[in-house]
Image 1 (tube, helix red, strand yellow):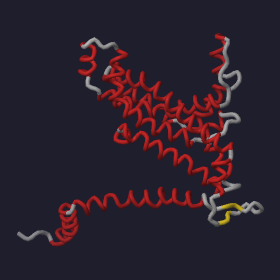
Image 2 (cartoon, rainbow, N blue to C red):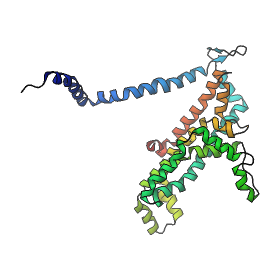
Image 3 (spheres, rainbow, N blue to C red):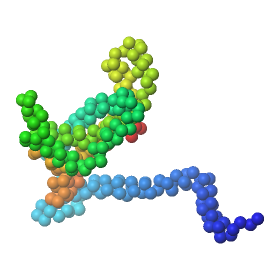
Image 4 (cartoon, one colour):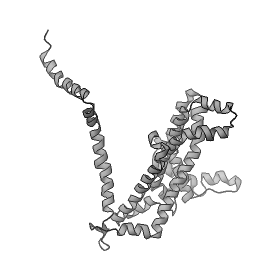
Length: 297
C-alpha cells in the first residue's frame, strides 16, 4: 500500500540524516562538539591570548593611552618591583590557607553527611550545604563585614573569654573566603566518602586498627583525589578574588586588587598582572595532576 506522499517526503530527509549520523559516529561527535569547542576557542582561549599579547604593550605616561609597541617592561617591573612580588606571594599564601581550612572543615561535615546521618536525611543535609551558594555573593561578604566589625557579633561572642574578633585585615579575608568556598570542598569529599565500601572500614577495625589509623591508611588515600579536586575550586576562586579583600581586608591587597586598580590607568600592566593568576593556576593543576584529582572533577 503506498504511504502518504507529503508525510513520507517530510520524514525522508530527517530519516536520511539520522541514518547518516548513525553510520558515522565521528561525524555525530564532531557536530556535537563544534559549538562548545568554538566557544572555548574563540571566547575563552581567545580572550586569554589577547590578555597575554596586550601585556607586552606600553602606556603613554602623558596621555595614558595604550601604545601597541612590543616591550617586556611590564614583566620586568613585575619581577623586579618588591611590592608586586609581595602581593603575588600574599595572594598565593591566602589561596593555600583557604584551601587548607576548607579541607580541614570539610572532612567532619562530609563524613557525617555521607556515613553517619540516616540515609533519608542525607539529601536534606546536602541541600543545606548548598543553601549558602544560593545567596548573593555581596550579601554574604557584607554579612561577614558586620560580624567582624568593631563591636560586632565576633567581638560579642569572644568578649566573655577576654578576646576580640580579628577585625578587618588578612585573617578576616581568609575567614570570609573559607566560608564562601567551603561547599565546593564539602561536595566532592562527601561523594568520595559515600563511595567508600563499608566493608573496608569494618575490616580495618577487625584487624585492630584504631579510628586514627583507619582514617590515615584507608579513608584518606581513597578520598585524597576528591580533596585535590575540591582544592582546584577553592584555590582558583580565592586566588582571583578581589571583592572580598576590598570589603573585609582593610588595607590588605591581593593580586586581583592590583589588576582592578590599574585597568583604567595602565591597561598593559593590568594585563601583565592578570597573567600571574593564570600561570599559578596552570602550575597548580600540573602539580595535582598525578593525584587523579582532574579525573574527579
